[in-house]
Image (cartoon, rainbow, N blue to C red; front, side, top):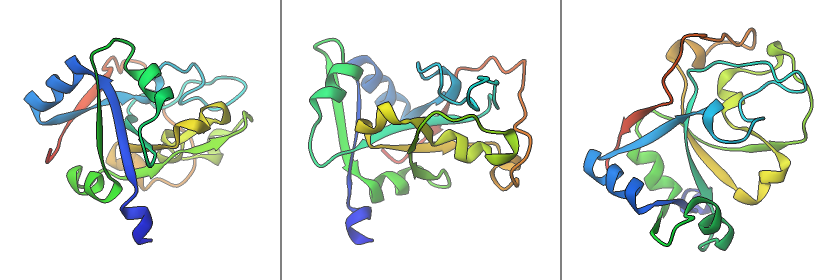
Length: 167
């Protein structure tokens, strides 16, 4: 368990995003259905829309820097990689859970088979190289909810939210 808590985690971003984060002393939590993968945050073959109040901030768990992650998330020459430990990351975000992503083969799911929190950390196998950990924000009424219908808020226009941290 101690090795897991001292696991190194990395976040790759542009220099502009890094400056934004430092000025606000906050992390940006992106809406899970806005992450750039059309299958992110959907329930399967029918690609049914899901809860639009699930927000995440993504980190990669690697012992060293990753050329692939630099290439994907820092396309310009002005990129920054933040490195910390899983323990420190968890301490910095307070009540928000920091969870490992589960990489799965694409298979249709019924809404009754998954909770919003589980959906927030579910991703397709081709992304397994990312070894991702996610800070997750799910509305309180959804966190403890037993599996059932995953509600959709049609008018949820927000693309993300701020989480104040101890940076």
